[in-house]
Amino acid sequence: MKDFIEVSPLRVLEKSSQKGLGKGNLGVLMARAGVGKTACLIHIAFDKLFRKEKLVHISLEDVPEKITSYYNVIFYDLVKALGMDNELDGRMLLERNRMILSYLNQSFEIGRLRENLKNLVENVELDPDALIVDGLDFPKAGREIFEGFKEIAEEFDTEIWFSALSHRHITDINERGVPYPCNHIDDLFSIIIQLQPTQSGILLQLLKDHENEIAPDMSVRLDPNTFLAMT
Image (tube, rainbow, N blue to C red; front, side, top):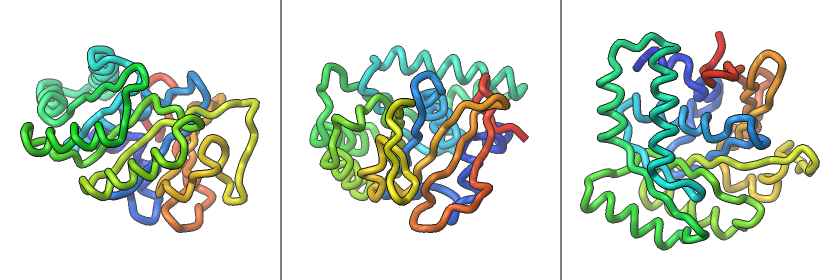
C-alpha cells in the first residue's frame, strides 16, 4: 500500500504547515461538476484505509451498494495502475475498517449522525479516524450544519472531508481568495482544496492551509484517468 500513499492526492498536504488536516478539523474539495470530486474523495479514503486508519463514508445521494461499487471500481483501477501484488490485503483493509452510512431523501440530521457514530463506536468498535461526506449541498446547508460537523469532529476526535460543487457562472470570491460556495464559511475549514481541469491533468490547488499563508507551489497535478499524483 506504500506505493499508493506515494502518489495519493493527499501528497499536496506534504507541503502544508501541518502535513495534513488533523483531528477535530474540517477539509473540503471544491470542483465543478464532472471534474472528479467523488473520485478524489474516495482516493482520500484509500489514503486513510491503507494507513490502517478507520473511516466512515457518509453519502447524501447514493445507497451504500452504489458507494461500495465506486470503491471497488477505483480499487481495481489502483491495483492495475500500480501493479499491486497485495490485493487481498487491500480488500481486507476496506472491509474491516470502512463503514458506509447513507442518508437519502433529505433524511440527514446532525443529531442522527451523532447517534449513528456513537453506535459504531460502542457496538461495532469502529472509532473513525476520518469521515468522508459526499453529496452535501453547500448553499442549502447553511452555516449551522457545518458548525454541527465541527462539533462532531471535535467530539469524536476525527477529521472530516467534504466535497463542494462550484459553478463556472458564479465567480464570487472573498478577500482571502476562497471562491463560492465556501467563500462565506471558509473560517470553519482548516484545509480548502480546489480541483481544476487543465490540458495536462487535474490541478489540485491548496487554497487554505490552516491559518498559514499559501506558498506558490502548493499544488499537485493528478492523472485525469487514475487521479493519482503525477511525478
